Image 1: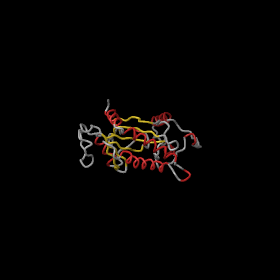
Image 2: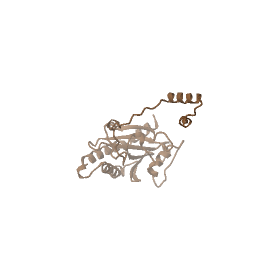
Image 3: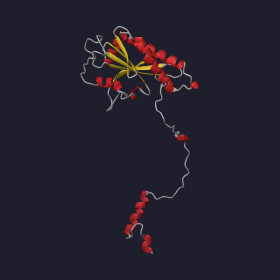
Image 4: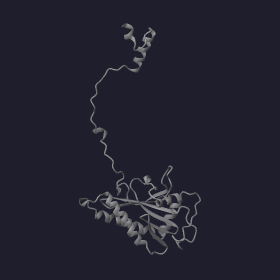
Length: 241
């Protein structure tokens, strides 16, 4: 089994993934149900609603559960269980387009996962007796989610983040958790401030004046002939004057 497979098995056995998956799906459906563009709602307000609902309801859902520590870090939900640290992020494009540089907390997990042979213990004040043993070598888990703004159907991926500031994939491993990515739209705009470009077929055909031009071969042959008879190219008019 892979490192991601091990993490999924442990988190599923502890009940984390079942609760979290249901919460993500419920939040997207409710956000779509109350989304009203005629009252000023747009993709940004939809995404913000999902983000804040997941953070607040997730904190209440996992708070005080045995063997689980939940907190809000960098305004995002963080769930810690059996040595694994699970954080949620909104997916604004393809799964390979996600970036971790948004904040220290966002990047920190990818950096820690990318350290070779890393065995780490958390500060005592952060995570008490829950982690009395050696933590997994790649303990940071990320859930990237999106959903359709009309139907509320959610899509989520789960994976091990990788520090790819130099190059490569942002993931060591990633898999589709649930949903149909082909039919789901991103909750937040992927690109802002862009101007739609016309299709090539819609562009007008310019009217050009046609000129008779010598080909390169003809020009070279003409120049060679002038030199053969002692004529400097471009100076024939001067000689005849």
